[in-house]
Amino acid sequence: METKAIVQEFLAALNAEDFAKARTFLNDNMKFIGVMGTRDNADTYIADMEKMRFKYKIQRLFADEKGVAVFYDIDMGKQTIFSAGWYELENNQIKIFKVLFDPRPLLAHS
Image (cartoon, rainbow, N blue to C red; front, side):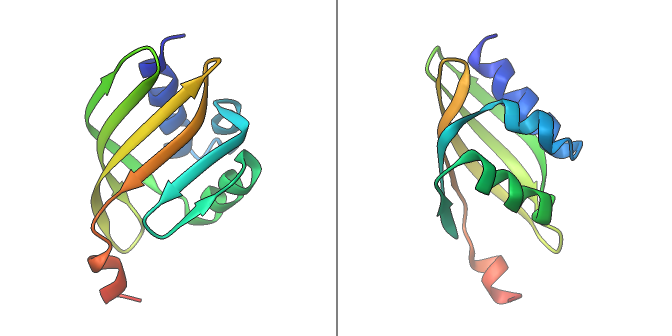
């Protein structure tokens, strides 16, 4: 499966709240780096996603054989935030991904 399809299916599984399927796209020791914190393994990340239930609307997606860049709107419940994600893959699984966005709208409502 190509990198683009892996990330698209991962995000589709999160949107469908099929967290077991989403987990299959993650390396056990994946690392998530975000504006509001980091996660150091797939199980911790998925447990957080089960609580937060974010929804992703892809605006643009660019890929090569090692990674995928995604611009998307992330519906975080009370706010929808335009974000950029960078997904690095290894052996057809997401190994590292970073998500960047302006956190000010979230901080104003906390």
